[in-house]
Structures are given as structure tokens and as C-alpha cells.
Length: 457
Image (cartoon, one colour):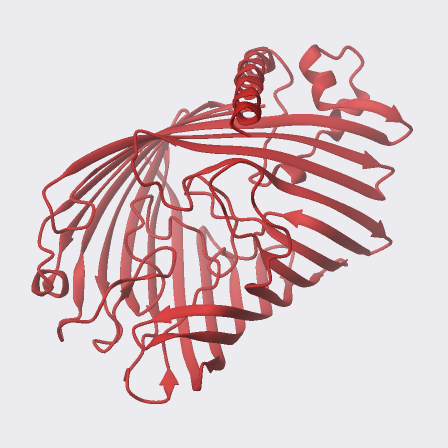
């Protein structure tokens, strides 16, 4: 097995060199290339009418017949990550390198059938104990068939999920390993409505080569996510139901099987330069022998304006996410964000969306191909009877005192995109512990830095 993996790594190295060569040539190609977060949504149909195709153009659009084609692509993302006082309690530093290479092929037949396959390799260097979202040496991250019948489509296979604001179900782009679901989906698309019903099994990530199991029954999620366009894409309304069954769930209250139902609505749009996004979710169900009653409300506003000839924006985000009010009663009030994006409050990702109140102002400015973002977040516990949960929704800090204020977080991100094919980004965060952490003997200031270089083709 070791020799096989070593050969695969060698092949991946050559594929990486090939990818970089393709990117270099792509710089000379058509300016209309755009890459989506989920690459199965890339639109390369404009190449159909192009007569003199370069090597890269042919790689992106290989005609197989009338209205049928095959497309190849991929990406490489390298990150250097550094922490000082990652756990707030020891004066120690550590740094490591994260690598993620993804290669895909995308087959389309007459606007009826799409077959998509994606291979992923996520590795970490110079870290003794990588966590589960940092290492997945070789995996089939996506492999599905999508068939269209008039306004309906059905998808069967493995896919990375992404719904709405990505607060409850997201592909987890920030961490090194994305999230994969084995699922079946039924979709309906009309002029003003998108309807989707699904049954999914989240893939439990294992660190080595091709060792992720299909249809792992320890966890299952099902539901319907729908979007109604109210007026020319200016005003939109999401409404959804999500169900989840987990064999093992851990909260301040204890460990038990959890069956949870989430009903939510989201209103988002824009008005005279002001972007807004309001979301409300209520949850009910059973946690062992206890009932569940939890909720969250979130508000995000962004105002775009001209500042000395440069594009600028100011924003404010705030959330109230319920926590358990009494660990000894027969009711669990801790909100479960299900499968949220990993970098919920920046790449530092110390606090997750449970038992939390946050106020998050931010400022951004664009100049040429650069964008600078500055932000501040103040964190409180919603309930002093409940602890603090991490980005993966594990109970990271138990409730050991009656203090609510968790701490201050200051962040800055500098992003540079010279072309659609290259992204360079530097992010730094400082977290100053508040009274809750200090009285838990966690009083060291945390410093975090990450540099990202991503190449797409």
C-alpha cells in the first residue's frame, strides 16, 4: 500500500507541474475565463464558437459531438499557517504548511446530462498531530451524475454542498479539506423559484489514501432548500427545512444520539448600494431523552461607496446563537449549525456558531487588483450555563464560571488577484481573551497568520 501511495504522489507531482504550465499558458488565453467556487458550475460554453483554440482552450473545451463536450481543470492551494498561543494557555509557537491539489473532468451531453469527477489530495507538512480537516491524502471528493428533464433535474453521487449563506450547510472552503456528501437530489427551476429536496450522508474524512467510506450511516441529513426571487434578483427569499440524525453528539449537557429539525428563512437583496442579509432559524427534536429547543438570528449589512476614486465598503454583522440555559433540565437549547463553513470568523476559527453573541464591524477597500479588509469582532456567551464550541462544533471550553464576555478579535486580510488564475492572500488575527477565558486560566493573547497562494486552471 505504501509503494502504491508513493507512486500516486509522484504522479500528482507531475500533474502539479502540468497544472502550473497550463496556468502560465492560460494567462495568454481568453479574458472571459471565470472560475466558480464549485468548479462543476464553470461555464466554458463561449469556447464553442472560438475558431483558433489554443492548447489551454482545447483542454477546457474538447468537442465530442453536437452540443457535447469534455472539460478538464483543477487548482492547487498552498498555505503557510502560524500560531502563537493557539490554546490561550501556553506561550508556544507553531507553524506548518498545508497543500491541496484538486483535478477534475466535466462531461456535458446536449444540456441533458452532466458527469463530473474530482480527485483531491490534501496534505500537511511539519505538524505532528493534524486535525481531520487538514489531511486527506487521496480521495474522490466529487463524483456524480446530473440529468435534466425539462425544468427538473436529478443528481446522484458524491458532491460538495453549498446552500444559501453557507451558515448551515457549506463545502468548508477555509480548512484544507472540503466537505463531501454522498447524496441524491431532486431539483426544480422556474423563472422565479428554485426548489431542491435531498437525502445526504456526510463523508467521514480519514487521513490516508482512498479510505473514505461511502454511505457511512453514523450521520444522515435530509431536507428541502428553496429560493424565491421576488423582484429581478434584487429581493430574494430563502425558506428551508433541514433534518439531521447523529449517533453521537457532545454538548455541555452530555453525549447522546441527536435527531434535530431546523426550519429557517432568509431575506436578502440590495437597495441603493446597501446589501442586506437577514436569517432566522428555529430547531427542535430530541437529544437522548431530552427535547431540543434552539434558535438563531443573524443580520448582515454592507454599504458600497466611492472613496477617493476607489471602491470601498463598510459592513456590520451580528448574530445571536442560543446556548443551553440549564444543563440539568430535560431540554437542550444549544444551537447546532449542522455543517457550516469552517472559517466562520476568519481563518483563525477559534469560536464556532453555538452559544454565541457577536458584533462584527468591517471595512474594505479595493485598488487595482488588491483588496484590503479590516474587521473587529466582540464575542459573548449567549448563556453562562453553556460552554464555548469550536468551528467543528466540538465543546472546546467548558463553562467554569459565570462570565459571559469571551474576548476581542482584530483581523486584517490583504488579497491580490492579478488574473482569474492566481490568488495571493495574507491574513492575520489577534484574539485578546475576555473575562470568561481569563477566569478559566486562559489569559494569553493569541496571534495567527496565514499566507495563501492558489492557482486555478
